[in-house]
Each structure stands twice: as C-alpha cells, then as structure tokens.
Image (cartoon, rainbow, N blue to C red):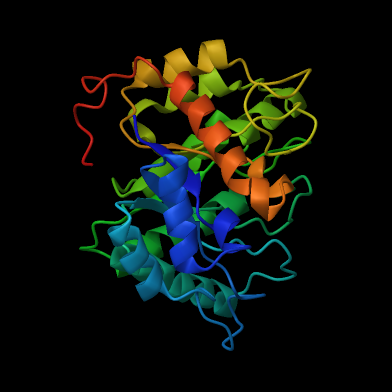
Length: 301
C-alpha cells in the first residue's frame, strides 16, 4: 500500500522543490494536489494554481513521488446557478482535468454542485439532475483522457445534503453512467454524515456499498460533530471505527494510495513540521500493515 499526503500542506510554507523533498524525506511515495484560485468559475482573472505545474511535475519526478490524485476547486459560496455558470464551471473543470493529466495523476476529485450551499436541499431531484448534466458534459468534453473523475461523498449536519448518503451518492454516479466517474471516499465526511442523517451510513457501510467504485481516498478522523480533519484515532468520542473500516477497505479490493487529508502537521511550526509528517506516515504505515502486494495486484504504480 502506497502512503500518500496532501502536497498543499507543504506548499503553504515551503517552496515547490523543498516541499517535494520533504514529502520524500517523511517517507511518502505519493501525494495529492489541490487546485483552486478562482472566487467563481465566472471569474476570468485567475488561473488553476498559483504554483508552477511544470515545477511540481519536475520536482515530483526528481524525488520519486507519484502525484496520484488532484482535487478540483469547489466553490462554496454561489448565489445562482444559471446556464452561464454551468458552462463556466464545465470549462474550468475540464482545464483542471487537463492539468491533472499533465501531472500524470490518475484521478481528479470533484465536489457536487450544491445550489443551497450547506442548507438542507429543498429540491434534491433538481440538484441531482443538474449534477448529472454537468458531470456528463465534463466527461464528454474530455473523452479520450485517461484521467477519471472521483465524486466525493459530502459531510452533513442535517438531512438532504447532496452526496451525503450512500443512496444519494450512487444516484449521481448511476445517473451519469460513465465508467470514468468513480468515487473519492472521504472517511471523515462519512463519519459526520452517519451521525447527522437518518440513514446511519457508517464509513464501513460506504465501503461495502461502493466497492470497486472507490478510486482514491481522503483519510482523516473526527468526533462526528464537525469535519475536523483530525489524525486517525485522535478523537476521544465518536471517532471512526478503524477496526471495521480498514478490513472493509481491504475486502473491497481497493488498489489506490492511502492518502492523508488530516490537518495534523499544519499545527506544528516549521522546525517540527517534518517530524509531525513522519509521525503521520508511520501511523498510516502501521494502519495498512499486512496490505500485501497481492492485495494491490491490480495497482498501476
């Protein structure tokens, strides 16, 4: 099992070349990269990333780090979803997918469009239809690309948040019906939603239901009250049952990276940041112990 971390947590304080060197020094074999510069997809003044993708690609190669996945930008504050917004969102997401392909990453995570932000959606069918339309258009416009989209399950502190239950997430996936639409399974999001919706879809239930649809992971923990992005096992109450989730992941045949989205190391000063990342790496290595090469027989890295 390849252990992965989020490169942006390094880029917040170090140069591109220093960041990839530290990723290697901490022990990781892969990383993920989050895109995002725009305030709205209608904004034409900002690009995909403030960092040079050419520099990131070169530094990753020099350090033997696989950029396994990226994350498309999510726009949390949108007051309207008209045809012009959809068109701009489709175009911008397609350009992010092209950047993902340039970096030789295999998957790009996307959030669903949420016209009611984090409020309970009064029109879930309309929201689903809009997402099916937009996701289908992105996949059609990038036909021939080897990069797959990975729709992420969302956290919910109330009912009717898009993609916050297994049923909702699968309705989006099946509505599109394209093999290039997979799932980025976020462990922390599932834990929050399980505690706040009537479905009770625990993280291990998600894995059992999604199976081979899961192409990449966001690994972190929380108390089930908030999406805290804590290190696994840290929450005192309501934390993820890793003793149930990890066997479920192995049983599913998952072959991607074990990718951290925990905010553990960012809390440390520069001088202790690398030590914190090494601790996280060692923890993740222990969590995946016994995940043999046979378990990863179909992995492409």
